[in-house]
Image 1 (cartoon, rainbow, N blue to C red):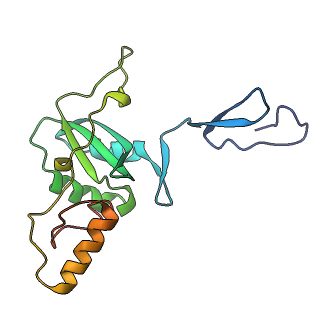
Image 2 (image 1 turned 135 degrees about the vertical axis):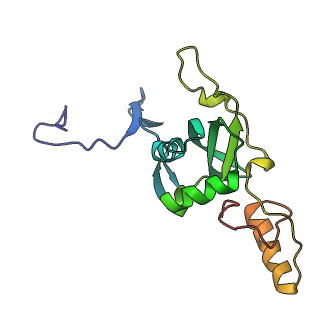
Length: 173
C-alpha cells in the first residue's frame, strides 16, 4: 500500500495488528487473521477447519492453537452427528494436509460455545484432556533400546507413559 506518512514509499500489509504507544514504541497486539506459526511453519487454521467440514458427519468445527504440556499444539473442536472416530479422522486428514497441519488433539462437542453475537467463543472452549489425544493401547518397552527411546519421548513430550506403538507425531512431536 502507499505509505501514509512518507511520500513515494510503500508499506507491506503483514496481517499483524499493532498500535503506537504514547512513548512512541509499537505494541504487537496479534494478527488480523487466523494465521499462526508452529514449529517454524505458518498455518492458516481456517484451511484445517474447511478440510474437517468436508467430512459428511462433521457439522461444525473450530481449530485453535493451545498450549498443552508447555508446547503449542493444534486442537480441533468438532460437532458431529455420529460417534467421532479420532483415529480414522486423523488418518483421513493426514492424506489431505501436511503433517505439521494435522491437529494433535480432537475434542468432540455437542455444540460450540457462542458469544452473544452468535460467533464462536474461543475463550469458552473446554481445555484439552488426555483422552483428546490419539494414543494406541499401551505396550511397555520390551528391550533396553525401547526403554531409552520411550524415556526420551516421555521427557521431551511431557507425557507418561508412552507406548511403543504410539506415534511421535500424533503425540505432538
